[in-house]
Amino acid sequence: MRITKGQLRRIIREEVNRVNRTRRSRRLSEAAIEQEIEAARVAAADIGGFADMKGRDLRGADLSYVDLSYVDFTGADLSGADLSNANLEQSLLGNADLANADLRGAYLRDADLTGADITGADFTGATIRRTSLDDVIGEETALGL
Image 1 (cartoon, rainbow, N blue to C red):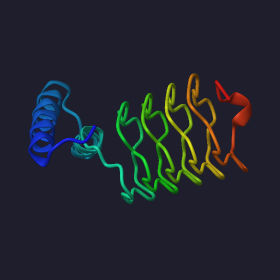
Image 2: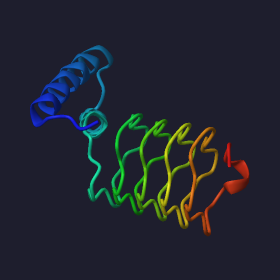
Image 3: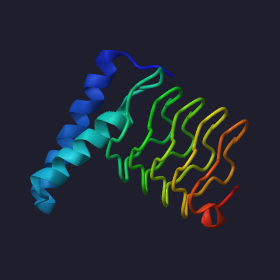
Image 4: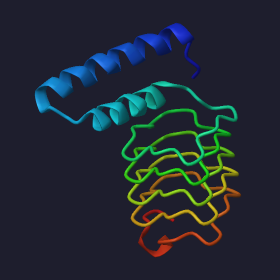
């Protein structure tokens, strides 16, 4: 489902307000606040369609139910991220850190996970067809493969 720019702005504004409230209540560091705001922006967006997320720090990001098809996550840190029910069709996840990521119900048709760290990741119920899992790290600890 694609969202309009206006809807995205509203979602981001709401998330920024939520983060600012969190900041006041937990007195988080500025770096942590910026990371939460960036994660909220990504989580709110429907960024499918050849977006470049190479090497991005998306640790713990909530990307559940997001269309991430064709996105290039090569070398990105998605450790602990919630990618449940995300559309990762033809996404590039080579050498990405997916340790302890939640990929339950994700759609990974034609995705490339070559060299990715999937230690402790949960792929239960994920659709994995024609997906490259060559040289992945931690396959023995990943669930649902």
